Amino acid sequence: MFNIGAGEFIILGVLALLIFGPDQLPKAAGQLGRLLRQLRRLADNAKTDIQQGLGPEFKDFDVQDLNPKRFVQKHFWEAEDDDDDLRRPAPQLNGKRPPFDTEAT
Image 1 (cartoon, rainbow, N blue to C red):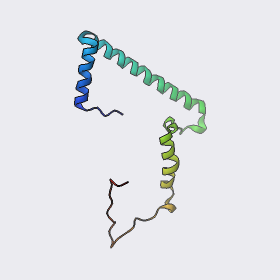
Image 2: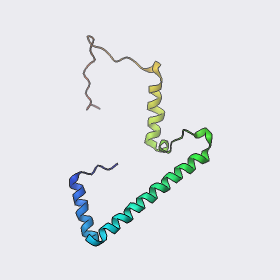
Image 3: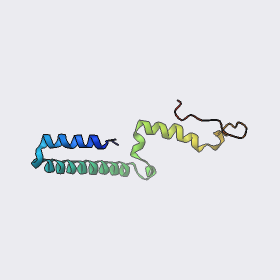
Image 4: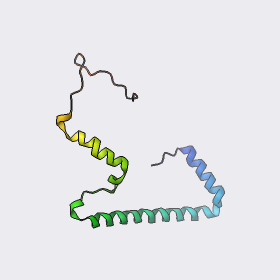
C-alpha cells in the first residue's frame, strides 16, 4: 500500500517523537492501533452485511469489483483471456520470437 523506506520511517519516528514527546508517544501509538483495528473491523462487518444482504445468487461477489479500475480489468481484459479462439500465436522469425521491449509503450 505505502512504499516507505528506512529513511522516511526514521524521519516519521523523529517527527512523532518531537510532536508527542517521549512520554505521550506510546499512548498515541496505542490509540492509533486501536483506531485502525476498529476501522478494519467496521469495514469487514460492512462487507459481510453487504454479501449477506445480496443473497445466495451473489455468493461470489467481491466488494473489490466495485473499484472502477478492477471493474475495467475484470470485464474487458480478463474476458479476452477466457476466449481461446481469439488468441493468436506469437509471430515467429526464423523459429524465434522477435525481441520484445518491456519498457516500450
